Image 1 (spheres, rainbow, N blue to C red):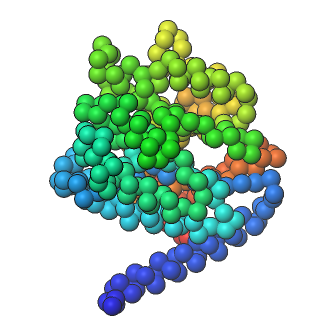
Image 2: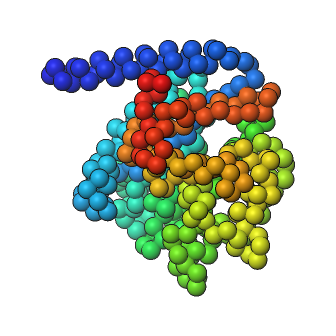
Image 3: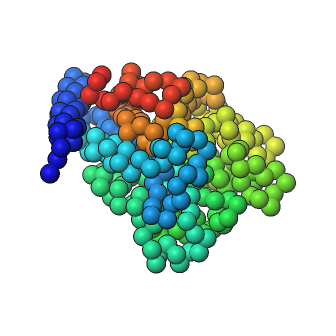
Length: 314
């Protein structure tokens, strides 16, 4: 049985979904072309489980939001699933789940944990979901990086960094937790600063040298990355060197929409988190013939906040 408020909320959600589907169809139809495809981005989903201990976050807002991460991600997922023409790929820019309830590897195969909960939600997407690592997907003080990597491989079939080649484009998930700033035995250990490490930097450069148009996703915003790691060799010099190849860099972590414009060479955005707002997604259109891309819901973004208006309110 539903009370009047619950019925009203359900009816409102259904109407919103219908409006969204109509709006998307109208927007896409206006510039319809077989040369176009669509992808979406979400970030900082912070899924928890029954082992989560309430009240351990940094503020009242954080303590409230962490308890709503599951329904908010489901809401974003259902919106993305509803669109026709369809979103073809989804990229999740780190903090898939929220910390580790145990330092014992076997614990995650003897219990249903936040890793399983996160996977169950993203399994509900109609299209492939590609994961990147965030700081809460590690715990550099308690859990070894090797254990995190083993769990991501076993649970999600995901490597520490990855590339998807799709319709002539590259979509690269970088991992800014593999360099010396994330190694607690290193003299420049500083978990608030991202670094990639030499192996990943060379791999990234090799990808860029193929000169395919490339979208780059990395959890920490570029302002929090170590500019160069080996003399003048590092992430920021590579971004500037290949800025004509790199279409866009998208980060998460700060849970707010920030437009860094071309401060680092390519266009760079940080995106808000579904942890705080189920409307915090990016809907992207790529025109392969014209070699252009478009952030479809950019006019709904409330910059420097957690929030974006619902897509159907455009």
